[in-house]
Length: 195
Image (cartoon, rainbow, N blue to C red; front, side):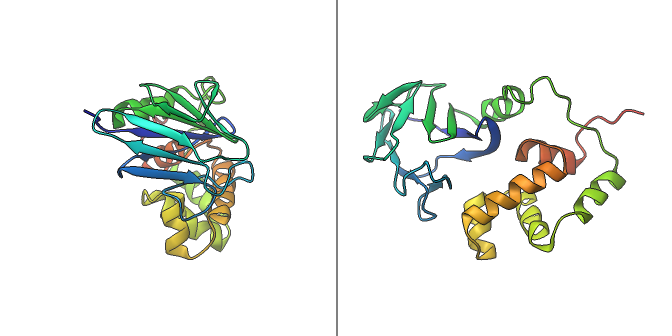
């Protein structure tokens, strides 16, 4: 019997978000109409589909231009094993079967940030960073803090998902974080502060 499934999604090695698979067929591709939108030119418009069966998850490449890789191997269709790594263009989708392991994966495994401490900020520092955002970035920032996916933010703000993605990267840079997980932790004040 298939249970829950979460993807920890990295873009070019940096954690972007955690996405829960909630439907029987999860379409994956560059177009905003996909359930899982990966806005990069190396991703086909309709790149792959994830299908939930009563006993397993199957991933199928939809004759994409650059192919789909599972644990480093190109696939046409394959069963998605536990802790698998799916590669689509510059995106890496790490498979987790519960939210706790997805959060642990997002917070602790990203090699690009593992040995780099997240800067500790005061409330004043956070406010200063926020004031440096453009009005458009501020709107995206507020939506990101609400927990919406980039696709949901794009729909709510009526802008393209590529624009949301660009604003998100700029926001992470200004706050000196590498992922939404770090941004949420920073803004929720969950980081330990030292003198």
